Image (cartoon, rainbow, N blue to C red; front, side, top):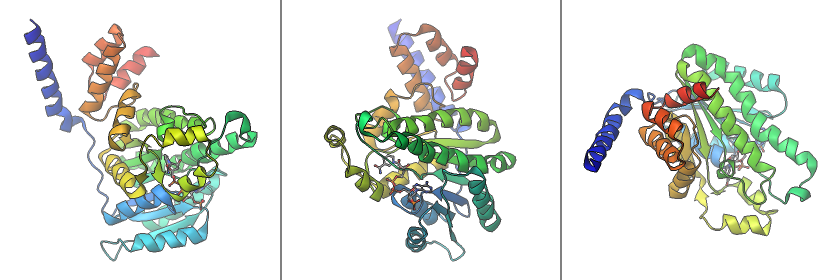
Length: 326
Ligand SMILES: NC(=O)c1ccc[n+]([C@@H]2O[C@H](COP(=O)([O-])OP(=O)(O)OC[C@H]3O[C@@H](n4cnc5c(N)ncnc54)[C@H](OP(=O)(O)O)[C@@H]3O)[C@@H](O)[C@H]2O)c1
């Protein structure tokens, strides 16, 4: 009997893998695509822009400091694969005025065509003990890291839905998967992005628009160096338990996942394990993710949910489960 159940399970999983190409999103072609990267003048954002440029994309960089933008543009242009490629720079604060952000996105679309992929990478970090962080910083961090992703996304979404294609990427953090000592101001801003991404993915999936949430680990960037200057000892000690990643390595993973339309993007084995443990009921874009959620539910001994997962083990499951739960 046990052998029969095991054989059935293996056959079932094999069947799922066989049908998985039918249900997976069609990869986005970056050659000739228009990619907007907020926070593209430094660190992870700049490396994402380089990675897309290397694959033939046209780039719009969005950040505040004009000198840094010009410097980044020069660096990115060294990686061109054809002489038609363009890097456009736009200086704006993505967190202040929605109309301003909408206008600059319009300008970028007039020059380089509709946005095929938006990468929301503008962000900033801050660590410190809860009672020692100046009270205004909580709101400011939420403005930059959360609203600074809402505004550009809102500015591109209607066109993406009309064209029935597009990718929106949110750069969260491993601190957006679990709360850590010293991140009472930062973590919630990154958790908020996941909530936004999950809800938005459910709305735009019927329009062939795919959302990716990236959870980078500690990465060697100017932003990380700056944050380290005021990090509490406890946060530093936790941070030191894993190695520091390079920004180009992180960027490659994020671009690959976004192109494939994967909802989750994590780096390395630590990142994979953390994503598996915290996958909850987030949208599923691969069979592996679907199975992870099935087994996670099974481990929690929730028979009703387990049955629903088994009945709908594809990426559609989240729709059913959420509808039933409402
Ligand atoms: N590095 C890490 O260890 C790590 C780990 C996990 C997640 N992340 C996340 O990854 C993203 C990039 O981090 P990073 O380390 O690469 O940072 P970074 O080197 O400091 O770069 C931040 C970029 O965002 C821009 N920016 C900041 N505030 C902005 C605003 N209000 N409006 C427009 N642009 C703004 C900056 O340019 P201007 O200052 O000129 O505007 C810069 O281009 C952030 O969201 C961060 O939270 C980083």
